[in-house]
Length: 110
Image (cartoon, rainbow, N blue to C red):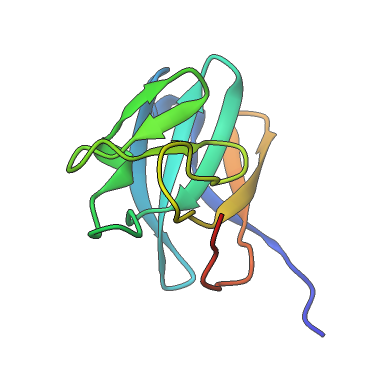
């Protein structure tokens, strides 16, 4: 059994409030978000058609895919208006640095 480790993702100033950024961590594309409720990370591609979630609109603790308006809960990755979900990852701050603990990659359904 492997132990999950936190990976340095970015500095706090790299992601403006209310926005997302795409980064690559351990070979996986991750969308990291900074909202009024805190920091969140999801797999970067929308499961519907691969839309770039980091470019989506962050609103009400959710992100809206810019391609087809699918909404995903930032904390859990749960689809709010569709049948599919996206993998969510744990985010921690250490000073002005942001770390992500990657979840196991798997296909998730709501």
